[in-house]
Length: 542
Image 1 (cartoon, rainbow, N blue to C red):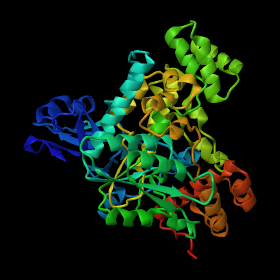
Image 2 (image 1 turned 90 degrees about the vertical axis):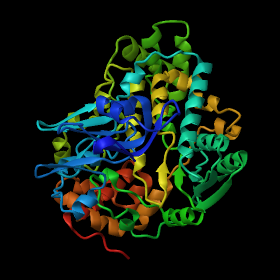
Image 3 (image 1 turned 135 degrees about the vertical axis):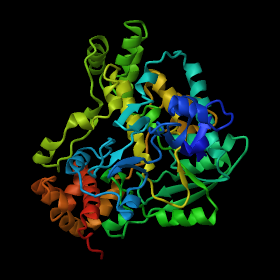
Image 4 (image 1 turned 90 degrees about the horizontal axis):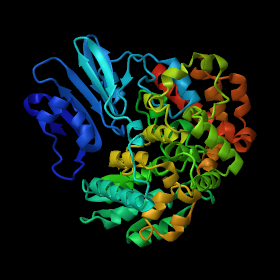
């Protein structure tokens, strides 16, 4: 925490100066820039609350990664700024009325990130946003927008790009690690967590590192062989934890703390208790992960990558190679990619990243009609309407990366070092066709860490999956699940289509149709959340 002189404000969280020198921002600079210097000269995980030196105005700023939660509500004539809504409930500062239109929007898209929340009168301060609170009321503006980095010129040299990418990743991982003496790293066996481990193993002032890998008794989620290779290469301890079949009632799978929106409800895996014990027994101060790599290093199979190239360079001799790479990357025919390249690249046909959202078959027609789709679009996406579709989707993924902050509390700090402002900014600048050079997902970061990450992981293009785990979880609880949802708050509010829900809540449907598996989980999470606020009973345990 950094406090300004004369009690004029505070910065909560972790901040690091971009040039690696003294971490403290000057109080004068904070005052004169109204916090903008934090976004330009620093990075980290923070919320700043600043007060005008000789005046009534207050500014609230949330860092561009949105790692720390921040909300605002009114209590009479007082503006209350807070991080955890259950504290406001305990202090009787909010009248917890459910915003059902927001819940409907969540059922449509569970990774929803909006200023609006599931509670009337509670506003979320968005990542990169600054609120100004004064006598005239409250106004909002964005101090950081991802589209501005997509528009910056970048030297399109592959060697230069890989050196820049490796350098900024090593810097961010090392800087985060310098804040702790002991780290538990979630080593999945995939590329991104292996990259983070390679950086941890190379920092000048080494920290104590313990790695953890979770596996289940199915081939889709067992990545232990790759995790062992990465741990051996780094010379660190690896603890392998088996995920047992869930025997818990479904309602015990989520934390019980009240939260502002269903999207913030935290799922508790079977391994959570073991992790808490491990954190305590090993004296762990922080849990690291590789989350964010898929989002920033370009794993999304976007067909507009060649269109991005033609917008930058027009028709030239390398265009066919880029079209061929995009075809290979997306597994789409060359003629299809070429058509997209012409329509989106030459004729600038608009694209919409929200088109990738799979509509839930369980949401009622009435609920869909109540959703204002313009309001739930993130302003960052709207500001990027003129950019190529590949960059729009990358910005969409930057927004989506905020979901990773909703993790179970295990008694240690949760750190996703790849979700750091300098890494995000650089990846936005690098053209998508460099990030996926040769038609390979995350190709540039693979090149950047050649020789540091085991070659078997660098060559690997598949990932572990959790579908089988969730199918088993729902099927084992099918009787309770049917009763809980079919007689629940969401059905009574008209948000769910009851006949469609009845068809989905069968063992056959859950096993055979992945189109209903995750919509059912989303509906269950929303039902648990809604009942926590409407004081209805949770489902019976057994």
